[in-house]
Each structure stands twice: as structure tokens, then as C-alpha cells.
Image 1 (spheres, rainbow, N blue to C red):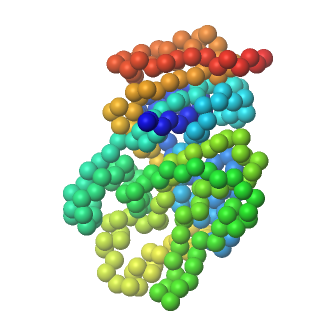
Image 2: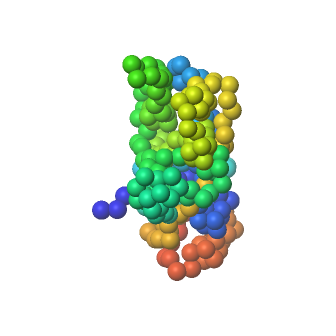
Image 3: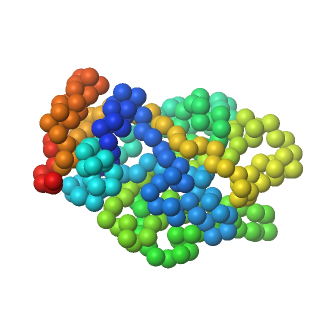
Length: 261
């Protein structure tokens, strides 16, 4: 059984998604909840994580329209889960020790700035809590083998007053060095210098945004719901966008049943 996610946004953003066939990931420093990038021990280490925010709820929700569409004029996109294009890499290619299938384009500009695991984007349902240890996690740990850092809890938890979002996310976690830099390092000291970038609270985020390509069939089963205050002219614009960029796909287009002035 197919699973679907929903994304509230502007008509302008819909146009870019349709034309460029990409989804934008936003740095945790720039999301609507200012706490999300904070950690207990290493400052704003959420700067190494980027997210694309969706919801599993198909409810036509006033708070979501109000927060994520301009003046309640916009769209809600329904799209199948994990709609991203996949790339195949052979053993030895891009530093891989085995054959790999990934949604990350290792020839993309963003890989010239950071390293991204082939498993990304990760999928996660946001959990709502008031537990400070989850909201501001300790991500650095010390063992006999040395220092380690885990981003596992970043981007996963929000305070309970955000519960109305029923949020589901795609998450990209980055390391502040490139695969090329890592391959050139041959000494323990060199690896430690790279790792120190993660420990440095003063380092600025490297990627404000990352765009992942959508698969060829990403728009199949897509549905568009127009926001409550969307005008007839805006309806025509959305219809024209679908006709231009999805000519071979029957996209269901409806207007919200919510009545609002």
C-alpha cells in the first residue's frame, strides 16, 4: 500500500518544484522553531542538519494554511513518500567500498562543500515532548576508543505545542568536510583536524539549503489542494502550471472546503 505525505506551501514554490523537479531542504537554523538547532553541549550543531517538512495528516487544517501559505493563498501538495531520484554508484566510484544506490547526487554542488551519507535522506516522524534531554540533546560522548558525535536526535523532537503539525520529515545530516578532503587525509592528526570542525561551536553552517532531484514518476498520484483564500485567477495559474509541467499526468486539483474571509 502506497503512503503519502502532504506539504503546505506557496504557489511560487509549487511552480519551482514542478519546473525544476526538486525538493528543497532547509537548514535547521532556519526552520520555524528556533530551538531545533540547539544542543546541550555543542551549541547550534543542528547547523549540520537539513530538513524538508511534511505532514502525514490529510486533514484540511486552518493552522497549517495560516502558517505555511501567504495569506492563506497557496497549495497543499500530496505526493507519494520518498519521491526522490535514485543514483547508482559502483564499487570504487566516489570513494565507495561497495555498490551503492542513493538519493544523493555525488556530482552535485553541495557535495563540494560537505559529506553526506548515502542513506540520506532519512525519514522520520517528529515526536512531540517537553523532555529537555530530547529537545536539547547531548550529542558528544567520550569512550575508551575516543570522542564520538551523534546527530541521531537532531531534527526529531519538538515541543508539544507544535503537535498540531503532525509533522513527518526527510532529514539530511552532513559533515563539514568533503569526501575529497577526507580521502587526502592519511594521518591520525589529519583526521582529528577534520573532526575538530564538528566540535567547533563557532563554525558557521556550510549549507543553507540543498535541493534533491525528484524521480521520473514523482508526480504520479500527486494531488493539489488550493488554500481557502485562493482566488479564481490563482486557480487558473496552478492549472496552467500543471498542464505545462505535468502534461502526461492526471493531477487532481481541488479547492479547500474551509470558508474564511
